[in-house]
Image (cartoon, rainbow, N blue to C red; front, side, top):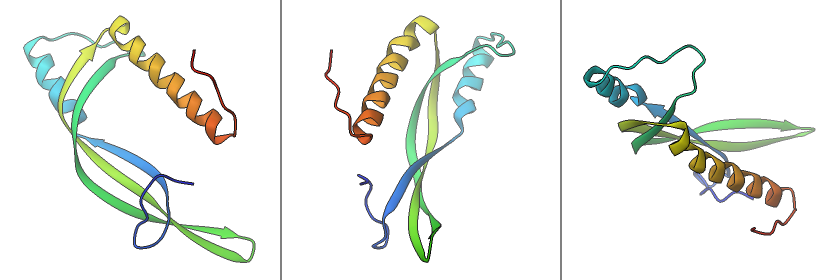
Length: 116
């Protein structure tokens, strides 16, 4: 069951995100304080965005003798600012996000986990 609102009376099965202008803020910052980014280097960015557009994309699923129509919700986020974070600054956020994502996957699979 999805927490997403229906679109025109039809179920929305997925939420997708597009980010536009993501490099603009960082490129502007690099003009003021240039620093190299090396090939295969991990870079952590904090983006400030606003939702600039919401669209729905129709999906047709062929199931045996039936056809099911669902929709993908495509949300376009427009970057308004960007900051580079160090690995040390980024890791606590990434760890919390990974833990929350795993907890949600477990919930969807019917498992319950205790918060520790």
